[in-house]
Length: 216
Image 1 (spheres, rainbow, N blue to C red):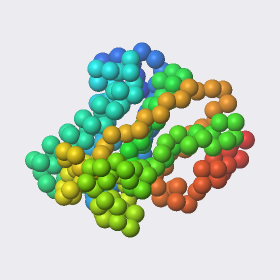
Image 2: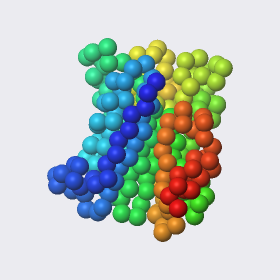
Image 3: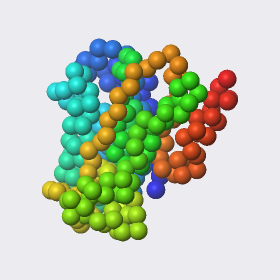
Image 4: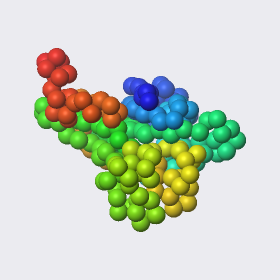
């Protein structure tokens, strides 16, 4: 597996005037694939456009992000139905900054950590199967050796429609994100977003301490 990322420092410049972005904004994301990179590329290219084109944006950003995840998931499922060779999956974490507001959306086991006054503040929750056992079992799924239905190490992700029993209807793997909102303050220094491979090596505190020492 290899992760992909997106860096958009200026939303208005990136999207153009038709996007009707009325405030300063930025967008960042990390996408970690499994079973091929097609899903990663699709979500990386499409998710932001679905967010800003949603009827709820920018009045209710959380709602727009929720809708966009599900719409992106369904769009890729449709693409896979036309070309089975595209079948694959990806986790995703995105950070949308609009003026002083920060919206972190996570589906999977990537993670975002904010450095505020030198302290590490976790801005997302890892969606490991054991964390969502109740929801998984209520939908007829199971956890075997830490894996969802004995196959995936995450409880939320995009796509994977090719894996029998995981997606579609009331199946246990979902693309719905958890969205967290925060208001930026002067003491916010930086944010780190990374895939599970990064966080397997670094604790939140050590990940923050390393760049902070070099930035001082």
